[in-house]
Length: 175
Image (tube, rainbow, N blue to C red; front, side, top):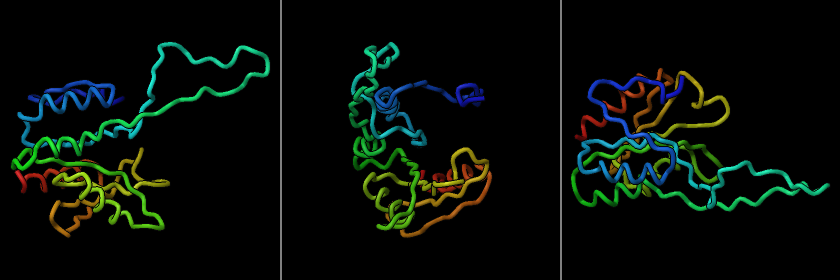
């Protein structure tokens, strides 16, 4: 079963999108009527510059096994754009998600805090990802970061419903 197969709860409106540009347009269209925006979609940073509707075939000449060049262009940073669109207004509350790994330069939380500052959202849900973590798992651990606060709320390892409840509990304090 995919998320597209799930039945929506009563009173929930859904707008189906397939590309980052479609998501951006839908978010801006519905922005003014929202109390809370949760940007949980994993939008790729880049997309192919050109699309074709047919299969890209291998070279037809004998010995021609060169791969085609695929040029990438940057997708819009929808989360940061929504924060800019809101400006100094009090709402809507904007929640972002970040899949992070630590590295030689910084820890997961340091990368998360830097992203929170860069994006400007109200809450950033930081998923520590890597081998055997997060993706495809029933349980997860997240760090909830709040704009303008050094507080970190660690949630998990827990069922994703428990994590969702913790996120909504925090959001409720901001609405």
